Image (cartoon, rainbow, N blue to C red; front, side):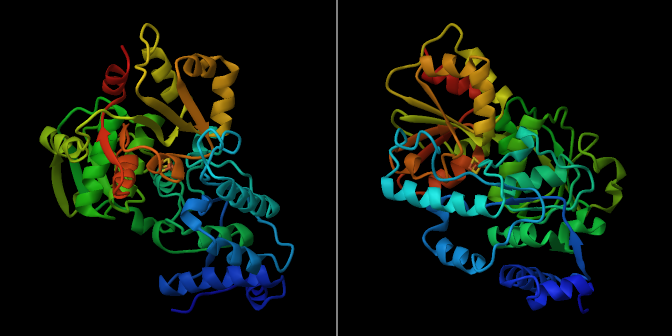
Length: 401
Ligand code: F3S
């Protein structure tokens, strides 16, 4: 099948609108041909990964040179994933001058394209909420899963270059999760154990993704799915597998229109499956030196929960406690004195970055406790770091007195 292009799109591809637009179109068309897309479709907005200097390295600068040949800007509202450091407190995070200089250059380039440097993996927490049925080009895997599942928007798991190409052209190829038939679940998962903490949601997602890779699940018997629970489930599914869409009976927008008679397999998630995941990330044998919370980026409610548990307790002296969030959420907790309360107890809140895409965690800490299987998964891949996975209330008991 040959992909249909409009006259305007043909012109964009041929270079009439400049080299950067032509290169972007080339990439989108190539992807469309590989996946046998029938046409290109307009997107409402884009979210671009490939921001942290730790993950992109120096090769990003030659890619930027290609795009710099003409004064191109993005065609739709576009946001950025986290960087490798807090843009203000990078020295406190022990980031080198060289790293910081390159990180600033990367962000400046994106800003020059008209991209909003939100530097968060959870744009939906700071007002950039996807609308049901919108076509998007997002590249942060946890955010992709949230957009598709929790909001009923439509995006494939874009790579950093393809989401940027879509931002520049305002287009994506019509394939994969943009098409209704590809959004049906393949497996019904009967959740036979209680999900009592954010890390339990994370454990469920991790277990499923590891076992079934990219298949779309339909969960039943989940009693609650608020935004904070959903983001933990979404991130975990996307980290251990590459699940970009999940349905939860009665709780996600597309679940009501699904005929579960067509699912190919039915399985159960039990208490022992949940324990398996916690045991898998029970690696620390001596004292922990860091608690890292905020994967995906912490919401106001996540931070409030931590602050509440501190009311009558003190932090132990021999452990660092870092929370990662967006600068926008940090400004909100600053305005209502939550930030002062946390900082006065020795808890550090870093914006714009996270425990995985910043070199400051795996480079400086050996034993890390977290409540996120995604963070645990990537941190334990760095051979120098051991992790423990625990629910927030257990973490707070362990690190306070
Ligand atoms: Fe976000 Fe970093 Fe986790 S980008 S989803 S906090 S690995």
